[in-house]
Amino acid sequence: MSDFRPIPKPGKTSFRGRAILGITVEISYVVILLAIILTCWLLVYMMLFHWSFRNIYVIAILLSVSVSLLPGLIVVIPKVRPFGLQINPGQHRELWRMSNEIADLLGTKPADRIFLDHEVNASVIEQGGFFGFGRKRDLIIGLGLMSVCTVSELKCVMAHEYGHYAHGDTRLSGWVARTAQRIKRTGGVDETSGCMGRFNLIYMLLTYRLKASISRMAEYAANEVSIKHLGRTLFLQSHRSISICWHLQRKFWEQGGMNALRDSENYFEALRTYIDSAKEQDQFAIIERFVGQAPLHPFDTHPGYGELAAFARQFPDKEIEWDHRPAREILDNPDLTEVSLSKWMRVLVSL
Image (cartoon, rainbow, N blue to C red; front, side, top):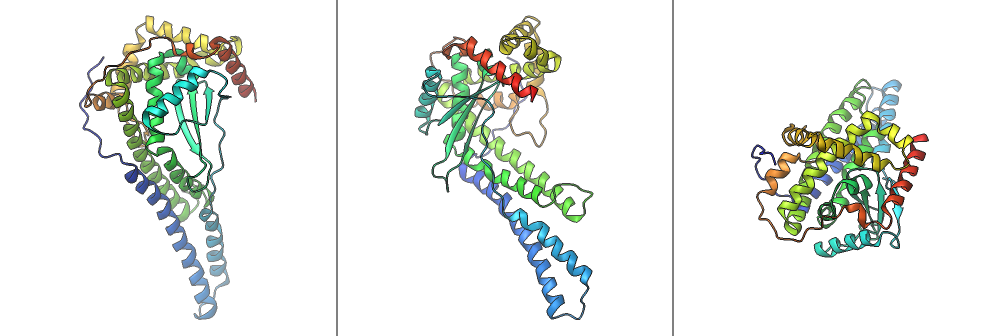
């Protein structure tokens, strides 16, 4: 494995700290909107009942500005159905069992639904409910991920995702999302649309910067969960392999992935062939060097692989028994599952 530049240990990643940041972003924008609206109404009132200066055009402008900002005060984030094929608990029982085991290991509630999509990735969301009660948890696992990793590596990835549940990160995502929705409902970020458009642009940049900061803290907290429970070596191995294969999947899509999806019954078999060919051509070492040393953008929501490697080395390793089986083998019928998802992808592409 390549040696990466030393990176200082991140600061505290407490739920309270991330919650304060997320809530502050939204509340401050609402306060600013209210201040502008109330100021407009106060000026109109003073013009109509107290001041001698009464200009109908100025009054109309003030009222139109206040009315245009009102939608930003009321925002509801609709429920989102995860992208992918939903599997019920009667299907792929070993995958469900692994999900429940990870949840028990971390002492958190397991996912209510599991979806399979095409990515070399995994993610979690939590939505619905009322004031935190009755929320549903969704776990999205990429068949592309299961095509390129082992069972132990998949378990390490799932531990990372469940770390987001355990630390409350999925409950915080709505705060920043609502702020973005408020900005869109008050005119968007068009800097040519006047003072409000420029203000929204500046605030949106600030929002995305804070979102990146919150997300990176959450990623470090989830990584720490994965390392402490499954060991540093497995964590580094899984993230190395998955980071490289994620870049290879993007490259595969750029170089003919659409053709493979159209011409091949099983898209994921074509993806595995491409990745195996990349291994033979020693592209793994080239991409590893790239992902390990590439500079991060201020809006990046995830730490780079080089940062993760430096972060993981701060923790002691842990002896665990590795399962080297391909992760796809825990599916009931992996070939049929991949063919079914390939068909579903072709339908979506044709829409």
